[in-house]
Length: 138
Image (cartoon, rainbow, N blue to C red; front, top):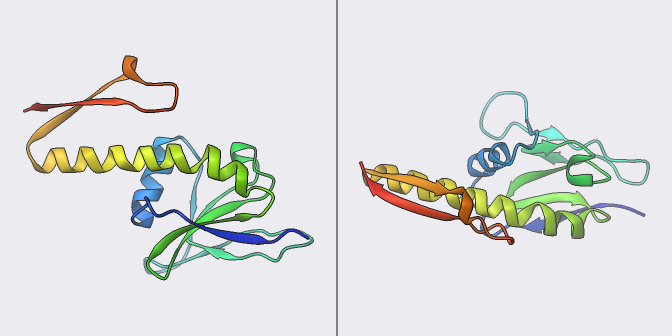
């Protein structure tokens, strides 16, 4: 029996950062419809697993996931909601690059507020995804 599980993504601060990070990674994301910041969209579920509401949804097949999955703000923490069959895959292939993308977005925002420019040095990208950023005065 498959079911949805929740994985706390402690390095991800809020849903807007997650949505921007997913966009940076080029991943398709669907936001909840309706009014207000907490409008949710349902995960489709499967024969064994009913749907579940999330704030951000990604379709099945994304990063080779069997089922659709998403992110929800739950008790003040961002959590990945995915089928238990996809958990290990998404913990390895989605969360680390998403955390790096969100981290880079935070650095860029902080640098801009301090009057600095951020230069990404593409040639310095390491095999594990690390990237060198250079800060320069405007």
